[in-house]
Amino acid sequence: MSKKTKIKRTNRHHKKSRARGGSNDPTNLVVVPTKTHRFYHAFFAEGTYPPDMARKLNVWIDSDWVMLALPIEDIKKIQKYLTQVNH
Image 1 (cartoon, helix red, strand yellow):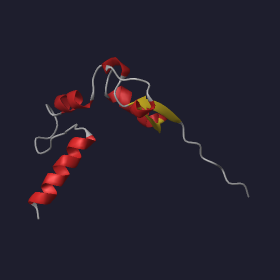
Image 2 (cartoon, rainbow, N blue to C red):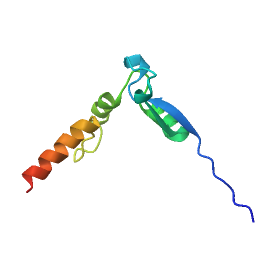
Image 3 (cartoon, rainbow, N blue to C red):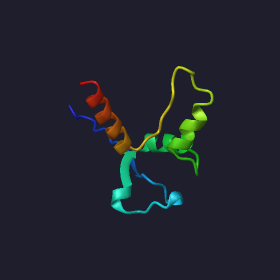
Image 4 (cartoon, helix red, strand yellow):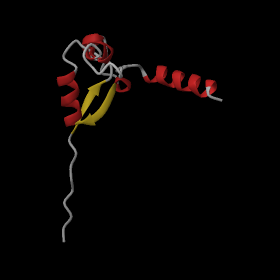
């Protein structure tokens, strides 16, 4: 009995878009599934990046929720602060 191998299609994605001054340096590239990559570019239109999109979505999103788009380093600082405050 042969086992089918599922091949995941992937793309390289620029963390900081070239339009915003990003480079093709390996530190600015990440490999993502093709479907995710397509969705990202459909959702975040050319010239728009996550913080801008979050501000736009917050106009009509449920008033009990807020969408944030923060760099990972900022999230880590917030987590560290909350851990210190809760102890």
